[in-house]
Image (cartoon, rainbow, N blue to C red; front, side, top):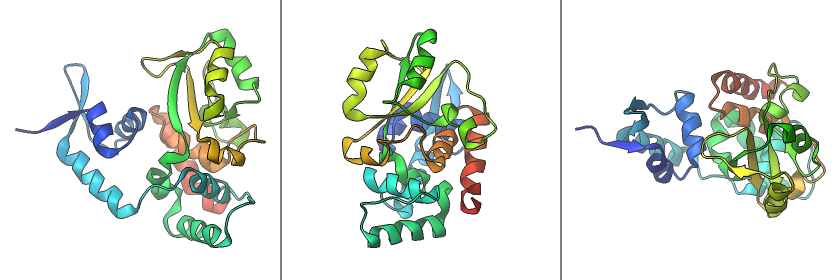
Length: 227
Protein backbone atom coordinates (compact mmCIF):
# COMPACT_ATOMS: atom_id res chain seq x y z
CA UNK A 1 0.00 0.00 0.00
CA UNK A 2 1.34 3.44 -0.94
CA UNK A 3 2.04 5.67 2.05
CA UNK A 4 0.55 9.12 1.42
CA UNK A 5 1.10 12.43 3.24
CA UNK A 6 -1.06 15.54 3.39
CA UNK A 7 0.49 18.90 2.42
CA UNK A 8 1.00 19.93 6.09
CA UNK A 9 2.62 16.56 6.85
CA UNK A 10 4.94 16.92 3.85
CA UNK A 11 5.79 20.47 4.94
CA UNK A 12 6.68 19.24 8.44
CA UNK A 13 8.81 16.38 7.08
CA UNK A 14 10.78 18.72 4.79
CA UNK A 15 10.99 21.64 7.22
CA UNK A 16 9.23 23.95 4.76
CA UNK A 17 6.12 26.13 4.91
CA UNK A 18 2.82 24.82 3.54
CA UNK A 19 2.87 27.57 0.89
CA UNK A 20 6.29 26.39 -0.28
CA UNK A 21 4.97 22.81 -0.58
CA UNK A 22 1.97 24.09 -2.56
CA UNK A 23 4.34 25.93 -4.89
CA UNK A 24 6.48 22.81 -5.42
CA UNK A 25 3.35 20.79 -6.24
CA UNK A 26 2.10 23.47 -8.66
CA UNK A 27 5.48 23.54 -10.40
CA UNK A 28 5.53 19.75 -10.76
CA UNK A 29 8.66 19.54 -8.60
CA UNK A 30 6.92 17.43 -5.95
CA UNK A 31 4.53 14.81 -7.40
CA UNK A 32 1.06 14.87 -5.85
CA UNK A 33 -2.40 13.48 -6.52
CA UNK A 34 -5.77 15.00 -5.65
CA UNK A 35 -7.85 12.39 -3.83
CA UNK A 36 -11.21 13.22 -2.28
CA UNK A 37 -10.59 16.94 -2.75
CA UNK A 38 -7.20 16.84 -0.95
CA UNK A 39 -3.70 16.94 -2.39
CA UNK A 40 -1.66 13.96 -1.19
CA UNK A 41 2.03 13.25 -1.72
CA UNK A 42 3.78 9.89 -1.68
CA UNK A 43 6.08 9.55 1.32
CA UNK A 44 8.73 8.10 -1.01
CA UNK A 45 8.76 11.36 -3.02
CA UNK A 46 9.12 13.40 0.18
CA UNK A 47 11.96 11.16 1.40
CA UNK A 48 13.68 11.46 -1.98
CA UNK A 49 13.47 15.26 -1.91
CA UNK A 50 14.78 15.33 1.67
CA UNK A 51 17.83 13.33 0.57
CA UNK A 52 18.35 15.69 -2.38
CA UNK A 53 18.09 18.75 -0.12
CA UNK A 54 20.64 17.22 2.22
CA UNK A 55 23.08 16.83 -0.66
CA UNK A 56 22.53 20.42 -1.82
CA UNK A 57 23.56 21.88 1.52
CA UNK A 58 22.04 23.54 4.54
CA UNK A 59 19.83 26.65 4.22
CA UNK A 60 21.62 29.99 4.38
CA UNK A 61 21.08 32.13 7.46
CA UNK A 62 18.66 34.97 6.71
CA UNK A 63 21.34 37.70 6.48
CA UNK A 64 23.49 35.58 4.16
CA UNK A 65 20.45 34.71 2.05
CA UNK A 66 19.79 38.42 1.51
CA UNK A 67 23.44 39.18 0.85
CA UNK A 68 23.41 36.45 -1.82
CA UNK A 69 20.21 37.78 -3.42
CA UNK A 70 21.61 41.31 -3.68
CA UNK A 71 24.91 40.04 -5.12
CA UNK A 72 23.04 37.85 -7.62
CA UNK A 73 21.11 40.97 -8.67
CA UNK A 74 24.36 42.79 -9.46
CA UNK A 75 24.03 45.10 -6.46
CA UNK A 76 26.91 45.82 -4.12
CA UNK A 77 26.34 45.59 -0.37
CA UNK A 78 28.29 46.72 2.66
CA UNK A 79 28.85 45.16 6.03
CA UNK A 80 29.68 41.56 5.14
CA UNK A 81 33.01 39.83 5.58
CA UNK A 82 35.06 39.61 2.33
CA UNK A 83 35.41 35.84 2.77
CA UNK A 84 31.61 35.48 3.06
CA UNK A 85 31.13 37.68 -0.02
CA UNK A 86 33.57 35.51 -1.95
CA UNK A 87 31.86 32.30 -0.84
CA UNK A 88 28.43 33.62 -1.83
CA UNK A 89 29.67 34.76 -5.23
CA UNK A 90 31.20 31.33 -5.80
CA UNK A 91 27.92 29.61 -4.89
CA UNK A 92 26.05 31.82 -7.38
CA UNK A 93 28.57 31.11 -10.14
CA UNK A 94 28.73 27.36 -9.57
CA UNK A 95 25.11 26.53 -8.78
CA UNK A 96 22.91 29.36 -10.05
CA UNK A 97 19.86 30.83 -8.32
CA UNK A 98 17.41 28.19 -9.52
CA UNK A 99 19.41 25.47 -7.78
CA UNK A 100 20.15 27.60 -4.71
CA UNK A 101 16.48 28.54 -4.25
CA UNK A 102 15.66 25.87 -1.61
CA UNK A 103 18.59 27.06 0.50
CA UNK A 104 17.18 30.60 0.64
CA UNK A 105 13.99 29.73 2.53
CA UNK A 106 15.14 31.58 5.67
CA UNK A 107 15.06 34.94 3.90
CA UNK A 108 11.51 35.43 5.22
CA UNK A 109 8.43 33.71 6.60
CA UNK A 110 5.61 33.66 4.01
CA UNK A 111 2.21 34.78 5.31
CA UNK A 112 -1.15 35.17 3.57
CA UNK A 113 -3.77 37.79 4.39
CA UNK A 114 -7.10 39.07 3.19
CA UNK A 115 -7.21 42.84 2.67
CA UNK A 116 -10.14 44.98 1.57
CA UNK A 117 -9.76 45.43 -2.22
CA UNK A 118 -9.78 49.21 -1.79
CA UNK A 119 -6.86 48.96 0.62
CA UNK A 120 -4.46 47.28 -1.83
CA UNK A 121 -3.25 50.54 -3.38
CA UNK A 122 -2.58 51.98 0.09
CA UNK A 123 -0.64 48.85 1.04
CA UNK A 124 1.53 49.15 -2.06
CA UNK A 125 2.19 52.84 -1.27
CA UNK A 126 3.11 52.15 2.35
CA UNK A 127 6.89 52.71 2.75
CA UNK A 128 6.96 49.84 5.27
CA UNK A 129 6.36 47.41 2.38
CA UNK A 130 9.15 46.38 0.00
CA UNK A 131 7.31 45.21 -3.09
CA UNK A 132 8.15 41.81 -4.59
CA UNK A 133 6.67 39.04 -6.70
CA UNK A 134 3.76 40.11 -8.89
CA UNK A 135 3.85 43.61 -7.35
CA UNK A 136 7.43 44.22 -8.54
CA UNK A 137 7.56 42.20 -11.75
CA UNK A 138 6.71 45.06 -14.11
CA UNK A 139 9.18 47.45 -12.45
CA UNK A 140 11.93 44.90 -13.14
CA UNK A 141 10.89 44.46 -16.78
CA UNK A 142 9.23 41.06 -16.34
CA UNK A 143 6.19 40.28 -18.47
CA UNK A 144 3.56 40.10 -15.72
CA UNK A 145 0.82 42.49 -14.72
CA UNK A 146 -0.48 42.72 -11.18
CA UNK A 147 -4.20 42.40 -10.54
CA UNK A 148 -6.14 43.27 -7.36
CA UNK A 149 -3.46 41.78 -5.13
CA UNK A 150 -0.19 42.67 -3.45
CA UNK A 151 3.07 40.91 -2.62
CA UNK A 152 6.00 42.16 -0.61
CA UNK A 153 8.40 42.01 2.31
CA UNK A 154 7.98 43.63 5.71
CA UNK A 155 10.23 43.66 8.76
CA UNK A 156 9.02 41.04 11.22
CA UNK A 157 9.02 43.63 14.02
CA UNK A 158 6.70 45.88 11.98
CA UNK A 159 4.21 43.19 10.99
CA UNK A 160 1.74 43.64 13.85
CA UNK A 161 1.41 47.41 13.33
CA UNK A 162 1.30 47.01 9.54
CA UNK A 163 -1.53 44.49 9.88
CA UNK A 164 -3.47 46.80 12.18
CA UNK A 165 -2.90 49.87 9.98
CA UNK A 166 -4.41 48.10 6.98
CA UNK A 167 -7.04 46.01 8.81
CA UNK A 168 -5.56 42.74 7.55
CA UNK A 169 -7.09 39.37 8.32
CA UNK A 170 -5.15 36.08 8.16
CA UNK A 171 -6.31 34.18 5.08
CA UNK A 172 -7.41 30.57 5.20
CA UNK A 173 -6.20 30.08 1.65
CA UNK A 174 -4.02 32.27 -0.57
CA UNK A 175 -5.75 35.61 0.12
CA UNK A 176 -5.09 38.75 -1.92
CA UNK A 177 -2.00 39.81 0.06
CA UNK A 178 1.17 37.78 0.32
CA UNK A 179 3.50 39.18 2.97
CA UNK A 180 6.98 37.85 3.71
CA UNK A 181 8.22 38.67 7.21
CA UNK A 182 11.99 39.28 7.21
CA UNK A 183 13.88 38.70 10.48
CA UNK A 184 14.84 42.00 12.07
CA UNK A 185 18.51 40.95 11.95
CA UNK A 186 18.44 40.87 8.13
CA UNK A 187 16.17 43.86 7.47
CA UNK A 188 19.12 46.25 7.04
CA UNK A 189 19.50 44.98 3.47
CA UNK A 190 15.97 46.14 2.62
CA UNK A 191 15.34 49.09 4.92
CA UNK A 192 15.85 51.78 2.25
CA UNK A 193 14.33 49.84 -0.65
CA UNK A 194 10.94 50.25 -2.32
CA UNK A 195 11.47 47.17 -4.51
CA UNK A 196 13.08 43.85 -3.66
CA UNK A 197 16.15 43.04 -5.80
CA UNK A 198 15.45 41.23 -9.07
CA UNK A 199 16.84 37.92 -7.74
CA UNK A 200 14.37 37.95 -4.83
CA UNK A 201 11.47 38.95 -7.10
CA UNK A 202 12.31 36.18 -9.57
CA UNK A 203 12.62 33.61 -6.78
CA UNK A 204 9.30 34.67 -5.25
CA UNK A 205 7.61 34.35 -8.65
CA UNK A 206 9.23 30.97 -9.27
CA UNK A 207 7.72 29.73 -5.99
CA UNK A 208 4.25 31.10 -6.82
CA UNK A 209 1.53 28.46 -7.28
CA UNK A 210 0.28 30.34 -10.36
CA UNK A 211 1.82 28.51 -13.37
CA UNK A 212 2.46 31.66 -15.46
CA UNK A 213 4.09 33.53 -12.57
CA UNK A 214 6.21 30.49 -11.78
CA UNK A 215 7.28 30.15 -15.42
CA UNK A 216 8.27 33.82 -15.67
CA UNK A 217 10.12 33.62 -12.35
CA UNK A 218 12.12 30.54 -13.33
CA UNK A 219 13.06 32.12 -16.67
CA UNK A 220 14.24 35.26 -14.83
CA UNK A 221 16.34 33.16 -12.45
CA UNK A 222 18.06 31.45 -15.38
CA UNK A 223 18.62 34.84 -17.03
CA UNK A 224 20.23 36.47 -13.99
CA UNK A 225 23.88 35.59 -14.81
CA UNK A 226 23.57 37.50 -18.09
CA UNK A 227 22.22 40.68 -16.48
